[in-house]
Amino acid sequence: MTVLDTALPPSPPTVRREALYFALRNGKLLVGLGVITVFLATGLLGPMLVAASPNDYVGLPMQPPSSEHWFGTNTFGQDIFVQFVHGLRTTFAVGVLGGGLAAIIGMVVGFVAGYRGGLVDEVLNMLTNIILVIPTLAVLLIINAYLGIRSVGVQALFIGLTSWPWAARAIRAQTFSLRSREFVDLARLSGARAWKIIVREIAPNMSSYLFMTFILLFGGSILIASSLDFIGLGPTEGVSLGLMLQNAHQWSALHLGLWWWFIPPGAGITAVVGALYVANVGLDEVFNPKLRET
Amino acid sequence: MRQYFGRKLLVYGLTFFVAVTINWMIPRFMPGDPVASMLARARVSQPEAVEAMRLYYTNLFGFDQPVWKQYLNFWAALLQGDFGISVWVFPTPVSTVIMGAVPYTLGLMIPAVLLSYFVGNRLGAFAARRKVLDNTVLPVGYVLTAMPYMWLAVILAWGLGVVAGLFPVAGGYSFAMRPNWSPQFVGDLLLHWFLPFSSLFLVALGGWAIGMRNMIIYELESDYSNYLAALGAPQRLIRRYAFRNAILPQITGLALQLGVLVAGALVTEIVFSYPGLGSLILKAIQNQDLFLLQGTFLFIVLGVLIANFVIDVVYVVVDPRTRTGMAGASA
Image 1 (spheres, rainbow over the protein chains, first blue to last red):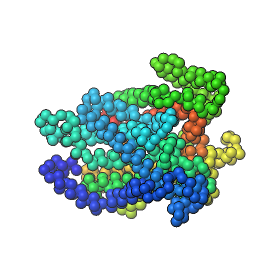
Image 2: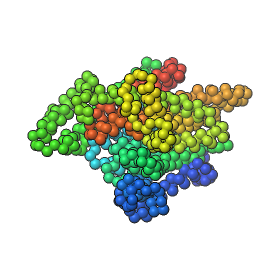
Image 3: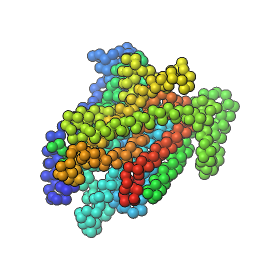
Image 4: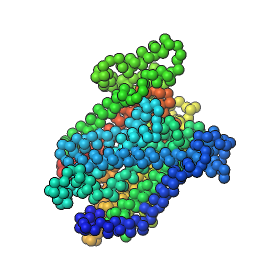
């Protein structure tokens, strides 16, 4: 990607068209995006189409899946499909907000540390390493335990604040390799300011990398959030796929044989996160000619 | 090499310092009053009793002293191994409660992590650039690594435990037994250990296999591989060289994954009511036992730091360049 960009600077449309050409022929990317789109559409449109609210008691308890209740009902007589649809929306929200925030912090820290170097780099790198070593979930446990009322937004905020370090480190390394290139020197000679060089010269040259970082952080946030929900520190109001799993476990769906209670939420998380990872590999192949199947 | 370790130890020391500071800060600077919430939990109605409890808890946190003194006291207590007293099992010190749970968590995690690491790396290295294998290992790996730990645990418990009835699904040993070293008890322990172990092992396996496969493909593209191939070296030899180069980033990866692995172990334990730190955390949260929760947090951080240091030592053993100071893993 970098070779192409430096060798053929005046023809970005060609590069873009080439990426599109390979994107449309990349099975992994298409499958991954397809699955994500289906689930995203379900999460966005589903809650509007199903009339019931997720915690309504709509039918007989412990009914297996039927045409009336697609995923059956739980021990309280709540419709699991309705909960699933609402939970998907929460899951995507946590992924986008938490992953997005982590990506932004990671980019700022990574770019500044990589581009500035010297003392700034030392300090930021030390900070990154410290937060990298602290187990994220353990910190989130403490924070959430002391928070009385927990909302999805706050959960995403804290996930974002704690999961950025590896992204910052990766972006710093990439910035390091780019900052001594001729086009960056040229921009510096022409008197451009630091942030402008970062935004206009360095970031575009690793845009695909940045996007892939965001995808991985997205998937990671979803998994962390579901673990938190499962431990019992999820949002105090509303539904999420993790909370559904927690409820199923707490009310011993296992022993009652209510498989339709605990299979769908976990399958939903696995499908979304797995599709994100697969799409990420597909993107990698699109942007990196070395990895394309020969 | 001394510089390498010095730098590492500095980072770990600072990390511990930050972790303790976070631990101290959160109860004090979070919105809401921890003492009030504990009193509300206790549901005591007599005003005298409430007042006595308030005084007790305020003393326990040391809220009546200036902030800097509270902080120093916190450190002093910590260095004496005093994590406070558990509310859930009242008069027992937190450190005793935690020490009872740690062996179970370690016994679960260490074999699962090491075994999944070795098997996953071998599997990934073997599958790379081999059409049929690659097309099976890769999708399976992605599904496994995308699974929430607790979900695979629940499915295994349901499939092999409840439906097939092969394994017990709750506890660290049968409730009818008392812990001792008799063969029956050890067998029972292993039987209870198997399902949590397998679910941890399987989820972690996917990630290692994928990581290794990608690294090997990258190494097989590199100049030295092409050169070896041009010289007519057998494919086995080239792959062995590639593996040795590819294992280095995987070691760093193990250090990076530790947090995720601990999180996985915690939720897996909760699914199986396995008497380790995960179940302890659940109990602490359900009973608003914040001292126990904070003690567990520090223990986890300490464990992760020690594991990181062990990995650093392994890295020095594996990569000769760090020994001569030519290059090293970035701190």
